[in-house]
Length: 443
Image (cartoon, rainbow, N blue to C red; front, side, top):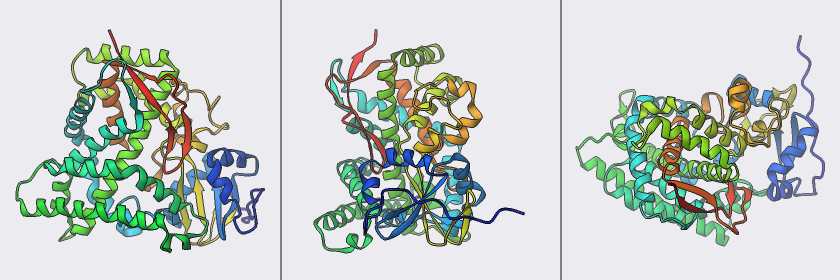
């Protein structure tokens, strides 16, 4: 007979009215790490809202796999629905299951050959103007590449360039405001006519009509292209075609979510490779041994084991998605503690990826650890989430990162620019703020 569920311990330091909102705002990852000493499941307060922080990898597995049906995606995702609608990131239940099933073929490995060609072309296009000694803003440079890839994967029509340009201009501010809305201790503030809410509505209003125009153009054109939008237009939900509104929401989701997270992952990789030049040299050596001077092809992906370990280690060490939310749809136990219906659950892939119970010296960047203890690392490293709701684009993202490394590192040596102060910042993503890099030609 299992032991009865108990109340979880409460985090210390809560303030009247605000609870732990300031701790969550000022240093969320550092604060989450301090909660390991409190328990595996720790009760916190964000204003009047009650929430539970998961600090244990074992309990994370319960949340994502064993008891995933007891949770929806949580209140944070609700604040993104103005942008994402019922896209895969924000939808739940049967809607999420059906749409994921319909879209899964677009992310099968056999489609990688088409996507990989787009990835190579976009890397070439956006690095063609680089010059030795040039200093670049990492966020702008990496976002230009990843946004170009996603936009071209969605639509091969000329309007892809216009769509990408609009998103790149608006994306940083949109993500900043999204995070502030999601983390507000008083959600009612998001509905008031405040300047930041007006700005938010204006940003959203500019994006949606452009996406609608892309879909309308495709509807009028009978040409079937090999892109994601053509696939969605041809998809069937039973006997019914996907509606334009559903397709719209998926496009916005892929554009925004597929751009920022991969750009952030690449930026962290260049930070870590700059700090560990011996690792960068091994990656370049493997790339040159396998590829020589030719472009990377899909068959090469499995022939780059060290490069793959470096990417896995970077995503574990500095996961772009540092926070995942869930909400209990019924009373449920996690780690032996009761989580009541309606309560929010917060889990950080940064925390599980630095779990000292499973990972030796978790703060060290050590790609070879994946050769020594791969299975336990797979349990702890959750950069794309886990279980049935794991990110559908995980293979796409890792492939894209591999292609960028293969095409950039063989030509350029990337270093943190002199004088650049790189500061980890947890917002919509976990990002190395202030990262500027200098490109140097390789002999």
